[in-house]
Amino acid sequence: MAVSGAFYWLTVAPQFTLADGGVTIEGAHFTDPAVVRSAIGLPEGVTPNLFRLRTQDMRAALETLPPVLSAEVSATLPDRLGIVLHERTPIFVWRTAAGSWLVDVSGVLFAQPGPGGDPAEAALPVISDKRTNQPVIRAGARLDALDLEAARVLGALSPDQVGSRAHSLALSVDDSNGWVLAADTGWQAIFGHFSPVLHTTADIPQQVQCLRSLLVDREDQIAIITLAVGPGRCGTYDPLASPSPGPGNPGGSGRSPVPGRTSGAGKTPDPGRTPAPSHSPAP
Image (cartoon, one colour):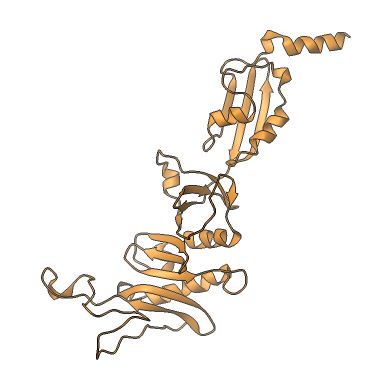
């Protein structure tokens, strides 16, 4: 009876009531503190007795939040509650027509980039998903395994790694060409659609090697590169259209195409002119 009475006194004693402002939250970079308090059932203004709090249940509730990998919840007498969040680390930004999402190493889209322009977030690679009929993405969704692997490998490429003089590279995926790497100098490299069997992400290193060989000594001449994979195959490229001399363009500098002349497979050349073939360097 004495023990029961003492325990009851602890659960109602005012000195063990959670203090106003007694909740501390650490590590909440991507998680709104109001969301944290709502998840554990302690919105602002609620001050229960510390002995009535179920910290294990609170921890489990916090770990259901998309940005949170794990959490720690501890009550400190007489009137404090400490919360420590261990959040996911973004490795790239996945951009769609409906918005952008931060993605972690396991492919979870866990939060949208902050409006403040965080320098760490601004340095992340951005992958643009331009495909149609994509499902609506919500926090906690997970990328397809092939998309994740392609984004991780191709998104990490720098101009130096592909032998380019460009300042930056942009990565996208669309319905027509699949994965496309574009340089700010103007060329585009088509890596294609990846699949679990025929053209897997294991082909990417060979395609990158091929891209380097195509860019050597001819980067300024290339418009579109189509990378192939297979024995004795590397890839082809469509050269830039020849510039057109004229008013405001003495000597033909610049990149305006000659009227009536195009380059690349499947395009119609000038009558009487033999089109320049696409070039296939040795693998």
